[in-house]
Length: 459
Image (cartoon, rainbow, N blue to C red; front, top):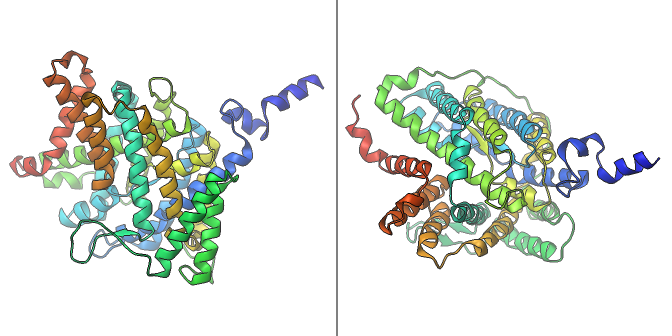
């Protein structure tokens, strides 16, 4: 009896699951992990439809939207479950926004590679990133980054998430005149009004410390959206699906552009993939309290390996590179601390293959308030950055601000790295710059100069 009682104390809920995923060690429970997984899925389920629209755009890759949607859910489900089981972190993966736009409109259309050739580029860059993980270089670069920059990355991602929330909620947009670049949209439409109401609900539930505040706010706001007609309940919950995009990639097509052009293209996308994930993993893990005193993520090699394989898998399945999602922060904010959160998200993605219209019930206006609140939670990391010190403060500022302003995590990281290295050098502290920081800073200089370098390269 005593042995059994001790076992129950070590595993508050979930039995063998609790032991495997270390619920007690990370201060969580099965119920919390399930709730966190539901929250993460509801916040990022939009990618199933958004990815289909981007890759299926007639002016882009012009792929079969139904097949892309099914493939997107399939790969996201499998790779997110793998992340949970192998790495034991609450990180969810899906087709990366930004890269899918490059795939559809730049690679497939502008460069004339077509859908298969564009996916070939993704497979190649995914293989290259995986190789860097295997030899330990990707993890070594993460560990070489100064702590202040790691925290700035977390803050920057928080501001980025907050900005996405305002955009998705319809409260920030580019005016018809094009000036200013972004402006506030007054809530004169039902959709914008739902976002405002949802934001008040979300903040109220959170500050009152209501259990399950984030997922509850999504559900309540969705009901309001249904009442005012912003979203509707589909009449048919089961749709036909196809996996015809799987295997539709060509790794030889990119080299028809010329070796150097192909190499620069693969390198540029690899850099985006590489540092988007690094920023997301560092920032979300910091928010979850899963980093050590130096800001390192224990066992990050397994996280990076799954993420790298996901990039290849996305390309091989014809749905673009899959990457770790910043929306994972929503589940972390709901209490998710282990890989079981990711397993729940992955299972829901697999179910979404058959029941995809269910995910469509939740409108962007219902998840936008959650993203805004999560952005605030990640922003609080700024208190641990010595911003008054120009050596740390200027690179941190560039990192934090450029992410939301450019809608690109890698731009912020690159600017911060270059500024940090530059300031160290001009202040006579070049010896404090880690060799890998030198290499990464130079790589980012090449990345920023690619538009200028491209035409100069031999074909």
